[in-house]
Image (tube, rainbow, N blue to C red; front, side, top):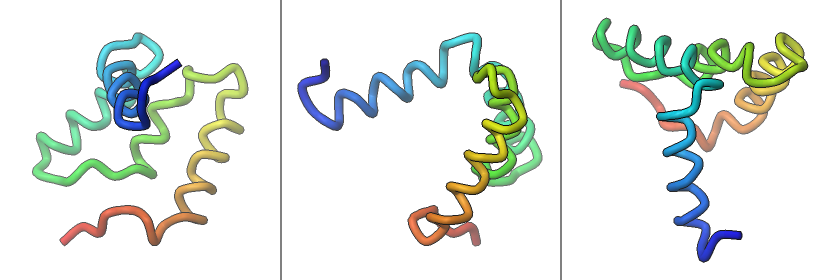
Amino acid sequence: MFGSVKDAIGAYLHNINTADAYASLREIRARQRKAGKTPNGRALADGLLYYSQRRESYVQEVKAMLEQYHEFQPQSG
């Protein structure tokens, strides 16, 4: 489907920044940036409530994955 991992990531980032399913995530990100904060994955996950039919269980699963793989996340500060 994609010619490279870079192409796949680029398509995913485009999707996050344009698709209606991610509108809440973009609103949370904009509020964080306006407050002078670096966007936080755990807070951004709350913007995925309407992305999945699983709603809150999906958001909680994303947050659990972020916790599990926290060492791969950029550190603020």
